[in-house]
Length: 379
Image 1 (cartoon, rainbow, N blue to C red):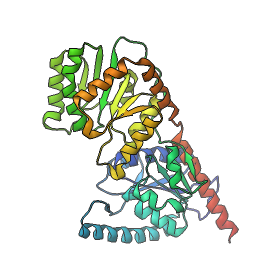
Image 2: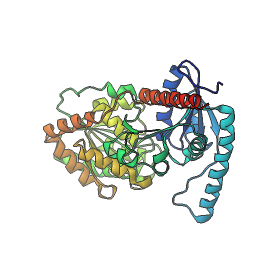
Image 3: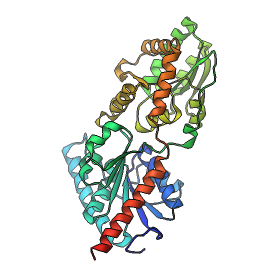
Image 4: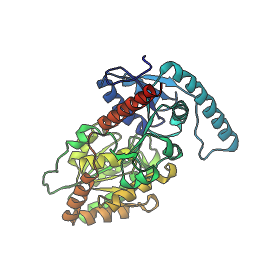
């Protein structure tokens, strides 16, 4: 691996961040763009996070670290996590001497901590991607020292130094951008999804709403992903059995494999407001009702939903308020106001950012070249 980086050399880029698919999948998209440009990529993550499965499956190398979170923990566990953070940062500093990474790409989260700290201490440029309206703890902590911050919301730029931010959005599959306007239909199709794991709140509210839809006679069609992990009255079996008795048109599934196809059929989407979910809504140009997960770190899902509501793309409803009655009334209100539904769709599409992965890769390569040029000039 050469000590210096230029536009024609193969360089190594480190990808920091893991734990959930929301951190890992966008980083994989950026990594693929770097490989297309002739570079190497190495992921840094943990054995227990989603990266341990997703990264090798995508064909990338993964270096394991031992690190834990710091929030909502007891004193003893927090001290142990701080010790891990320090020791893993020092170990990565030593590995940097051998790897000579050109730059680090961070999706944030506690898993990114050691890699980012090692990079900053070694003078390796860090480019972070912050897809939430409110940056996470790690990204807020390093905000003043990163070379570039790639964000999804205009309001997020205030957390970073002027001139270092760019609104790129989050990498989203091309299939979502390819979704066009839904053809006119007498049926109003509502897609309900709490993500791959599902949501007890969304599932129970949907079950409670079925009789109200039947009684109303509205031409509603339901597509519902319950998630496979929900139990009891919120389980796939319970929701599916209740739905089958109603006579309503639609389908209840534990998991929807082709989510872009489900989006294509939907007039309205009811879902949580994680970064991935709202990015897909924007790419597809779909109106939505957002119910933020109330226990998300730093309440970032609420901030995302508020940003979409301010933009006129969504209706926000708190988890504690989401009942069958609330669900029914909002769907009925939107069904009777097609102009508002169309306006919400257009406003959602205005929030979309195409080519986020390619742009992130270009910025990483640019920062690597800049630091290499500076190092040459200082010799």
